[in-house]
Length: 126
Length: 272
Image (cartoon, rainbow over all chains, first blue to last red; front, side, top):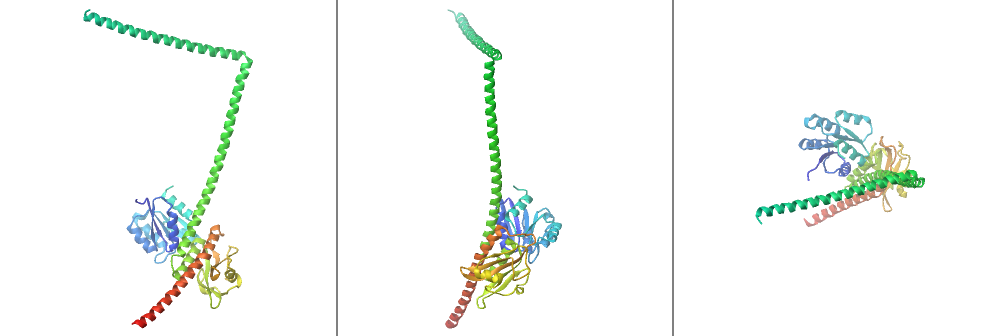
């Protein structure tokens, strides 16, 4: 069966990745692809189609903000919804991410029902 | 008889039959008409008598009042049922929120437990403990203490928000951290934050059965996290047991690996 929604999770923490996958499994027909840092995420998003990306800001190799800038620089990825995950509640990070083209942000500690709510709203699914 | 005459008689019979059926149908129509006329007359008379007779009016009024009463009863029953359904709806909505929250909590606990037992590498286990405390509890400054069994002192081996060396060594049984590890009881204080390394807001003792392993001391929560939730307390309990077991297993595994390598070295030396 082919996936209805393909979601890319770019996050360096395996715990967080597993939690996000776990939360999004409740979304019918969703397929999650994991990337462990910004560079890995960029490779995957360039070579494959995704309906949405969840990106952590603080990551080794390439951080989330740089990844968002590069994604939004690609014509075919301009419309892909991006959700940013940030540890700090500080507005700065969130505002920078939103200014770069992210659509929504989530702050840690992550609540799986909140993740699902945001993703559902961006993908416009019940 | 000639054929022409036979045909003529045949047609006359057919015509007669048709006429008879028509006559019967007309009779039926007349009878039905008569019946309806009588019915109308009967109703007219009934109405006339009812109009004249007070008793009949009372009877009619009584019947109507009874009907109104029964309709009122039906209406109030329906309203009552509607209220019940609304209340049930509210209850379902509340239960849905509770179930969602429970789902969220279980997902977090499952992931934390899964990750803690996913490796036998001590540094990986400590890294996972740190990830859980940041991502699932939402702590900004904390330290993971390990008990040095030779000196009986707790020493910070990993931390977040401050360098591990900044945290003081704590004798077992001393202060909030030492007492918590010795007694095996989680300390949970005011969540507003503390800059005093001797006074964490939370201290989770890490113990395997009665054996103290170390402690997890939280000093400050993330800016957006105002207070502890029921899930946090579940996570404290989970960490107290599972993190301790994972650290203990990883240490044993590392020791046994070292011993195995030493023995293998001796065997190689003797056989080669």
